[in-house]
Image 1 (spheres, rainbow, N blue to C red):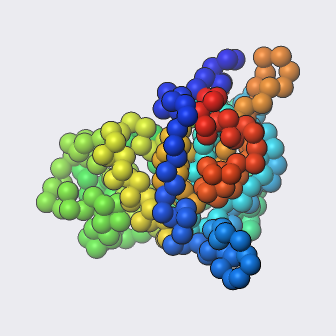
Image 2 (image 1 turned 135 degrees about the horizontal axis):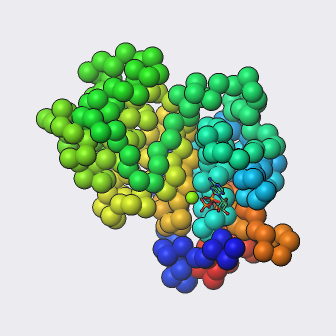
Length: 303
Ligand SMILES: Nc1ncnc2c1ncn2[C@@H]1O[C@H](COP(=O)(O)OP(=O)(O)O)[C@@H](O)[C@H]1O
Ligand SMILES: [Mg+2]
């Protein structure tokens, strides 16, 4: 399947200049290492892991989609997963809250520890887990309900009493409150696309998860709406762990503390499988990648 390696449309202007976020250089929620004498240039250090992936693999029926992914995902930081289309970014993300359980024929192997516990164990209730690990999708997907009901619905499902204060706080956190405070009873679909996506983030925040997974949350949005979402991601990352799939490297550089670069590897003739090529701080990946495949991708030489 050649579609696996088609370049993303936003990633094919070569070469591109990557502007690292201020957070990547001097992270507010990570400890800068090497501040003592003779330590060389300060390298941001990532906090303790909330997820530990060990040799993670996913099959869809007879097709191996992802193989051998091992990495830690630091707590209260933003990890971006980047890489060409079809390299298994969404598949890997969906493993983190057992969403692949819902895909017929999908099989996950290897190990994921979440807070030290075996997340893939049959003892884990995936519905409970999804209360702790929320998800925001590419296309804004509010329920056909009012703005307020969208926030309250998830709270009720998760056993949280939906008080006016909690609804307001979730909308404040998602940087939407000022725009909707006078129209909470309006239909969610009356909002713009960017507002709908912030509403979906507010809905995810409202159930007080530990982690929010986002799969290309800005790809349906214009640049202004995208920047609003990026700002809110940076603001909430001190309280929630964020794992964000993006095909936009500039975005990854602007927002993330850690970057995981996935790519596709050929197996037998015609068979291709997603692998993790390299993981590191945003600074390492964008300024000094170790793997030639990462370098080729971030300099725009390959999609
Ligand atoms: N629900 C599914 N059923 C079967 N194959 C799938 C499914 N989702 C993804 N795949 C396959 O798994 C591979 C990785 O896909 P995906 O995780 O969507 O990649 P990415 O998000 O990086 O574009 C692709 O070859 C894709 O066709
Ligand atoms: Mg995807």
